[in-house]
Amino acid sequence: KETNRRDFIGYSFAAVAAVGGAASLVGMKQAWDPLPSVLAGGFTTVDLASIKAGEPETFVWRGKPVFVLKKTAEMEKSERDLIVGADRYIIAIGLCTHLGCIPAWSKNMWKCACHGGEYDANAKNTFGPPPRPLDVPPFKIDGSTIVLGETGPEYNTI
Ligand code: FES
Image (cartoon, rainbow, N blue to C red; front, top):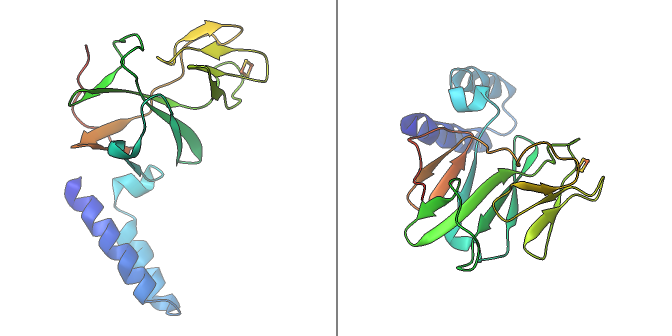
């Protein structure tokens, strides 16, 4: 997979160089086709070092919002924590598990404005109609970077 990803980046640069050449782009399309990460809808890389504790960031993966929270020392531990060095992260698809609205972060929880659903900092549903925690997207960890949409070895838990 690592090799495929590098190839994909290489092809992207090649495509930029080939602007205006429709025939070349058809060739590019064929070159892209066998790459599983592209067939699956692509991937998004997130540099965890850029996230501030207690201030979750939202990234877009396959058109969906993905929340990445670096936990503060005060936040309760969870079996779903991604541990990188001394830091803990929560990674969650940012769509309410009730009917799919995008919850907003406020006072250490995600609140869904549609019907009042709430999720704690572990993305666990704690109030209102959501039937389950926010979903976990597939991702792999690569040093201090996560790659959404690719799967890797199980990540560390408590
Ligand atoms: Fe979020 Fe209904 S969609 S509470």
